[in-house]
Amino acid sequence: MIRWLFWGIIVAILCVLPRFLGDYTLYVVSLTYVYVTVAIGLNLTLGYANQVSLCHASFFGIGAYTMGLLLAQGWSFWLILPLSGIFAGLFGAVIGFPALKWKDHYLALITIAINIITFFVMMQESWLTGGPTGVSGITRPSIGSLSFTSDINYYYLLLVLFILAILASIWIVNSKWGRAFRAIGLNELAARGHGISSFNYKLLAFAVGAFFAGVGGGLFAPLLRYISPDAFTFFISLEFLIMIVIGGMGRIEGPIIGAIIVVMGPEVLRMAEAAYLIVYSLILILVMLFMRGGLVIVLDRLREAIPARIGSRR
Amino acid sequence: MPLLETQKMTKDFYKLRAVSQLDFQVERGEIVAVIGPNGSGKSTFFNCVTHIYPATAGRVYYQERDITGLPTDKIIRLGVGRTFQLIQLFLEMTVFENMLLSVQEHRGTLLSRLFTKDDSGDVERAHEILEFLYISHLKDELASNLSYGQQKLLDFGMVLMPRPELVLLDEPTSGVEMEMRGRIMDYIRELNKQGQTFVVIEHNMDVVMNLCERIIVLDYGEKIAEGRPEEIQTNQRVIDAYFGVEE
Ligand SMILES: Nc1ncnc2c1ncn2[C@@H]1O[C@H](COP(=O)(O)OP(=O)(O)OP(=O)(O)O)[C@@H](O)[C@H]1O
Ligand SMILES: [Mg+2]
Image (cartoon, rainbow over all chains, first blue to last red; front, side):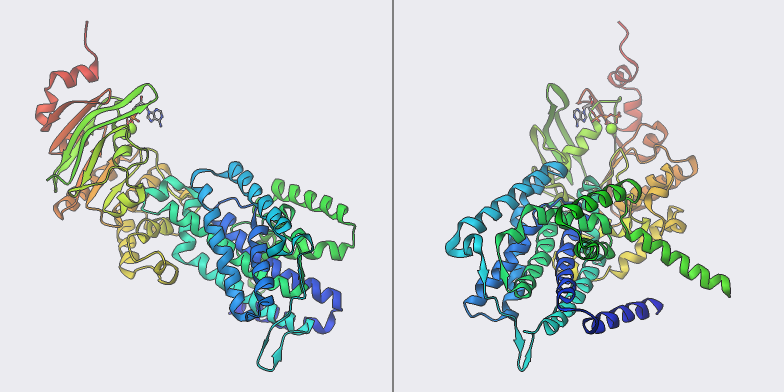
C-alpha cells in the first residue's frame, strides 16, 4: 500500500515536472527516459541472464534507424515503434549465438566487434543509412487530434512508455523467463541439469534485451528529430554498461538510478565531456570496490531504515 | 527393451580412457547401483548418458529412443532426472525458487512461460518434498545459507520435483547424516514402488546392499562385474579392484 502511494507520488511529480523545467532540462529528462528503456534491456541481458553485451548501442541504433527510415517512407509511428523493437530483437537473437559458446570477456570482445561493425555499416552504407550525416527531418507522432509534436507532449508520450517499459521488465523478471534467465546466469550446469535450455534462454535474453533497446531507439529518433552513427558507437554501449553497474545489476531499480546519474550527472555538474568521463570512471571504481550491488543498495538501506523508525516511534 | 541402455559407450579425456566400451541396461522399476573405486568412471558415465559432454563413442537409448547427442536439457525433459557429484544449486536464489526452477521447463511452451504462473500442483509438491526433507522452514532462505547436508537434500528434492521416470543419483547419501540417510533410502524405495527407476552411484556399502537389487562394478572405466548384491560381495575381481591384487 505504502509502496503504491510512493510510486503514485513519483509519477505525479514526473507529470507536473515539465512546468518547472526549461526547454533544455525537459529534453535531458526526456532523454533519460529513453536511456532507461535501453538500460532496462541491458539489465535483462547482462544483469539477470549474465550474458555480456557491449553492443547495446547497436540494438539501440537499429531501433532508431528503423524509426527514422520507415517514417520517411510514410509509415505510422505506432506501427514502427513495435517494429523497431522486433528488428532489434531479431538482430539480438542472432548476436546471441556467439554466447552459446563463449562467455564473459570473450563475449565482451565479440560484442564490441559487433558494435564496431554496425557502426561502420551505418557510416558506409549511405544509400540506406544516410552515411555520416544520418537521417534528419524525423517527425513526431500524433493520435487523431492529439499531437506529440511539441516537446512537452512528446515528454508525456515518453513518460508513458517509460512506465510501460518498467512494468514490462518487472513482469518479465517475475515470470518463469526471468527465473530461467537468472538460472542460466548463476549456474548453467545446474540449469541444463534441470531441463532449462541454455540455447533458448541465452538467445532470448539477447532478443529481449535488444527489444527494449530497439524500442528505446524508436523513441530516441523522434526526440532528437535527427540521428547519425555517432549516437550508436561502442562508447554509448559502454555508457549503458556503466549505467547498470552504477545503478545495480540484476535489480529493477538499477537501470533507472544508473541512467539518471549518467545522463543527468554531466548536466547538473556542468562539466566538460572529458571531465565527466573521469568522474564516471571514479564512481564506477568506487561502486565496484565498495558497493558491488550498485547504488540501489543505498535505496535498500533507506527502505530498511524508514519503517524501522516509524516502528520505533509507536 | 530396457528403460535405459548404453551400447559400447566410451569416453576419452585426451589419453585417459574414463569409460570403456560400456554396455549397460536398466529395466523399468529397478534400483541399480553403480560402484567402483575412485576415478573408475562412474560420474563420467552419468555425464555421458545425459550429454553433459559427448561420449567419444557408443550410443544411448532411453525409452526405446536413441538419445545419443541430444542436448542435456532435452534429455532431462524426456524424463531423466539427475544429481551431480558436486552439488549444483542456484545459490543466490531461495530454496523455494530452486524447487520451482527444477520443474518449470517440464510444462507448457516457451512462450507460455512468460505468461503463466507456477502450477499450483507444483507449488504444493515443492512444499511436500521440502517438508519431507525437513528443510521446509528454510524455503525462503538463499540456498547459499544452507549447510552442506541441507544443500544436498535440496539437490535431491529438486531432482524429484518433475517426477522423472529415470533418476540418476551421484552419491546421494554422502555428507548426509545417518538418520536422514535412512529416510532418503526409504523415500527412494517408496518412489520406486510407485514406478520410478533409480540408478545410484554410491560408496556406502550399507546403502548399496540395502537398497539395490542389482549392482554394476566399474574399474578403470570397464564393467568388471554385474549381479545381485550377494554375488558381487564374493566376486574375486571386485575384491581385487577394491583392495588391490597381491603380487
Ligand atoms: N572433465 C574431465 N576432464 C578430464 N578428466 C576427467 C574429467 N572428468 C573425469 N576425469 C577423469 O576421468 C576418470 C574418471 O572420473 P570419474 O569422475 O568419472 O570417476 P568416479 O568413478 O566418479 O570417481 P569418484 O568415486 O571419485 O567420484 C578420472 O581419472 C578423472 O580424473
Ligand atoms: Mg564420481
